[in-house]
Length: 107
Image 1: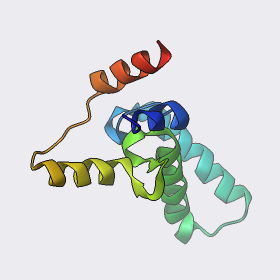
Image 2: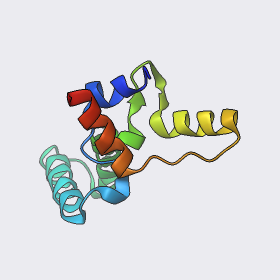
Image 3: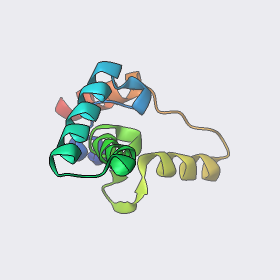
């Protein structure tokens, strides 16, 4: 049950990268590209800079990309895979499950 604390403390906005609206990703991409251009970064490295900043955005806002609060070297995806291997069944984290957990924590 201690794993529920992650959702409460990390406060993810989305479950997976696929859940992040395309317009949100596009807006973030434009911001990061603009920042890199303002800093005078060469065009040939812009894509790598933007990709790195988007990865950081996902790490902050997407549950499955976040580091586990009890061991920040492990992401939630890795934790789910580890537990799946231990129990011998593929576990899936679904939005409804996350919503139920958040309501239970609030409640």
